[in-house]
Picture 1: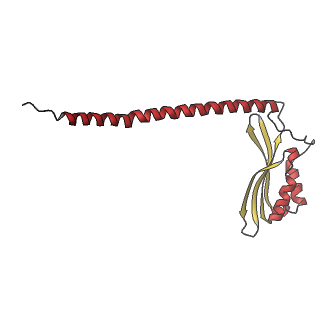
Picture 2: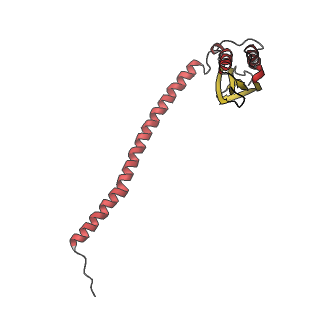
Picture 3: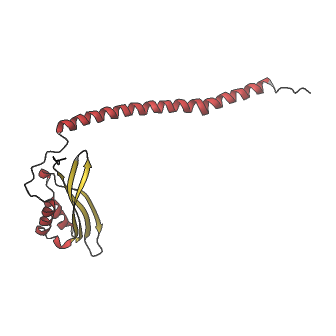
Length: 169
């Protein structure tokens, strides 16, 4: 028994549908992916050039911000404690501890982490203005404020400054 083939137009339509399907689900996604890769590669090349340019500028500047020299025997902890006493917030200090952080690239910073509790905004602002010193690169990189249950605000903050590079290493 010989089976008859479907109508030639039906075969042509099926073949055309298969070709269109292959084109839409195979060829188009592949070419779109190649175009996207080319765009990402070009963007990565631009980013690399920018990074090289910035690295050159950083090397020219010496990697460290120019800060005023720190006097012999200077202690960031003592500075923060003294400012807290002068500004009348020493009674609000829940804890205060010194820290030393590695920033990478051979750079380190000295820091003091502290929590001030039940403080008015005026006293907090006065304390922050007195403790920050741009000339010596003393800054407050982290400040978290929360409402206090006793009234006022609680402040968790970190006061930091760059440490000179250790020449013995």
